[in-house]
Image (cartoon, rainbow, N blue to C red; front, side):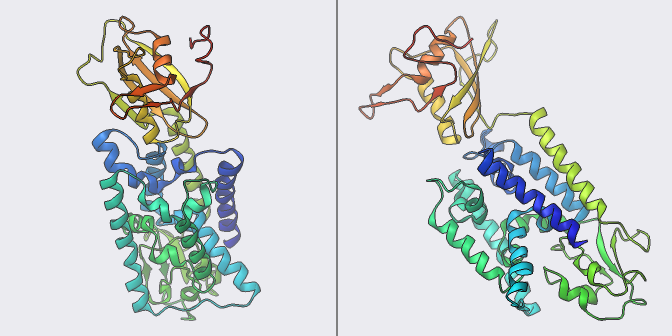
Length: 399
C-alpha cells in the first residue's frame, strides 16, 4: 500500500518539477487553491487574478470531486508540499533515527483551527486587493516559481520552516496551517469512504493510530469519518489483523474486505485526465474586456488572433486596452472585445473588431508602438512583442 502511494506521490512531484523547470510552464495555472482565490474576482469582473487561468477552476472541481468521494486524497497522494513533508519524516528521520513528536490531542485540535484563520485572512486580502497576497509567503510558490524576481524572501522562510518542522512532526503544515486543507475539510466531511474497525476482531494494539500521519485515533472509532483523513492506508498496512477484517477502507455499506487501493489510483488518474482535457476542450480566456458603448455585433465582425510575448499576468493584460485606446496618431475606434490567456512565453490574444472602422494592421501598430502619455507627460514604450510582426518592417503583418 505504501509503495503504491509513494509511486503516485513521485509521479505528481515529477510532473510539477518537469513542468516548471523543463517545460518552463506556468504551474500556478494548475494549482487548485488558485481556483479558490480567483472565484470572487472572476464572477464579479470576469477576469482571473495575476497569472491564474480557467484551468484553476477545472483542477479545483476535480479535486473537490475526489474529496467528496475519497476524502483528502489530494493531500496524501498529489500535493508536492505534503509529499516533501512526509518524505522528510519517513526518510530523513528514519536515517538519523529521529522519532516524531506526539502532539497532545487537545493541542492538536486547537492548532488545527489555525488553517481556517489562514484561509479567512488570505481570501480577505486576495479578494479586496485583487492580488495573490499569499504568494509572498507561499511555500508551494517557492517550489514552482523558478526563483525569479517575483518571489519574496518570506516564501523561502516559510518553506524552510516547514522543512525543519517536518523533521519533528508529521506533516505540520498540512495539519495546522494549509488554507487549502481548510477548504477540503468542508467537503471531506461528506466523504463517501471511511476507515471502519471491527471491535470483535481488533486486538486494540493501537498501531493504526500511531501510524496515522494526521493523528486520527483510528483505534478508538468504529467508523473513522474525520475530515482530515487522507486515505493513505497507513493504518491498514500496519494492522496485524487486517486479513481477519479488523480494519477496512471503503463506504460503510461495503463488503467486509472493503475497497482496494486501486480505486484511489484509478479515480485520481481519471479525474486529473478529465480536468486537463477540459482545459483544452473549453479554453475560456482568463482576461476579457468588452468596450462599453460599442455594438458587439457589427454587420460583419472580424477576429484577429495573436501570440503576444511579455503578456504574463492580469496586470499586463490590462495594458492591452490601454494601448488600443490611445489618443495619438495610432488611435483606433473599431475594436470591440479583447480576450487573453496570459502566461509565460507567447500568450494567446483574440481581438474582435469592426473592419469598417479599423484594420488588423492598425491594431498591431496600436499594440506595439510607443505611446506619449499626456497625463504623465512621458513616453511609454509598449511591453508587447507579437509573433510574426516586426514594427520596424512595414511589409510584415499578421494574416
